[in-house]
Amino acid sequence: MGKGLILGIESSCDETAAAVVRAGSDVLSNVVATQMQMHALYGGVVPELASREHLRNIVPVVRESLRQAGIEAKDVDAVAVTAGPGLAGALLVGISYAKAYAYALGKPLIAVNHLEGHIHAVLMEQGGESAESTLALVVSGGHTHLYLAALEDGVWRYRNVGRTVDDAAGEAYDKVAKLLGLGYPGGPWIDRLSAFGNPKAVPFRFVEINRGTAEQPSFDFSFSGIKTAVLRYIETHGMKAAIEERRATLEKIDSPTLDDVRALCNAETLDLIASFQAAVVGNLIRQTMAAAQHFGAKRIVVSGGVAANKELRTRFETEAGKRALTARFPAAAMSTDNAAMIAAAAWPKFAQGEFAGPALNATPQLRL
Ligand code: KG4
Ligand code: ZN
Image (tube, rainbow, N blue to C red):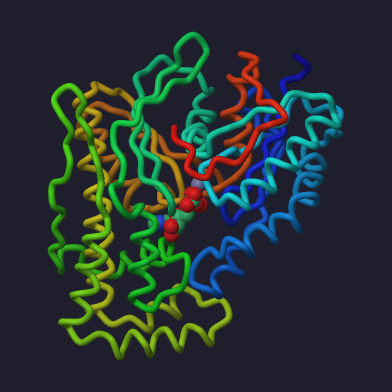
């Protein structure tokens, strides 16, 4: 079994990442080359450009991950790679590279679901294994899912008990930020600007959606309604001209600071931003708590890009505390896409001998 050194590779979206993790939780290196700045020019991820950037970055990123871990390629015990979900062309770069690498080294290849990776970004910090009944909320730019997770005979099993029926939470953040003339990705801007507005100024409401049946309850989300509500608010409150001015001004600033952006937002805009965030965070928490109560979960783990959100973290901790639950979040570097979480999720599969063959392909809509 060697030293349990797993090389993880992740290229599902706009981050080329490689990491070396020992025995599922000891992170020896975690290298991420982000393409965010490039895609920001287009206001979102451009798949074709993403694939090309992955091709350019994959070799130096993997080399750097080995260098930082202080090991050589031959020391690696297995190569783990994200097989989906994600952008087909982007995934293929990581998968092709991982296959060739594993083959050349004569080491096993392990396929990892990106969403399982996000969950393990939190579990790995808890030592990985736990019998505690766990509810996992994965909230990112592409996903909003609730899973019941349990370790059975060394194998993690997941049951999807909630999902978004339209936009992902991070997508709503990004779209609303765009509507307001803020930069991409919008989540971090809305997060930081919310502190300066009144979250109760605009009463956004969420309609109750699909609850499933008594035998098969579902705790679903919907975020496209609030995006439309923000758009309607902008139109009915005559905010368009100010938004265009803000967009044009921000385009001329190289790396705007929080002060730069805040100076371009009046009180009404800051109130709208804070109200939007309070509504989204409130909805995520309500559904998650309802599911936790229904299934009797003792621990909630929150991961994915939106898990970096400050208000989401504090409100989850408060609400969990009231119900004698624990709420766990990944460290900041582990909440956005990275390869350490992929290597961590691969560890139980390595122990079980759950390996992928040379026919491994990208599965853009892979489910967990
Ligand atoms: O997990 P991730 O890096 O990539 C995907 O797999 O999608 O998540 C990126 C998403 C973006 O939508 C971004 O706006 C959002 O996470 N995000 C945030 C924050 N930081 C990143 N949303 C809200 N608050 C934040 N602080
Ligand atoms: Zn992700």
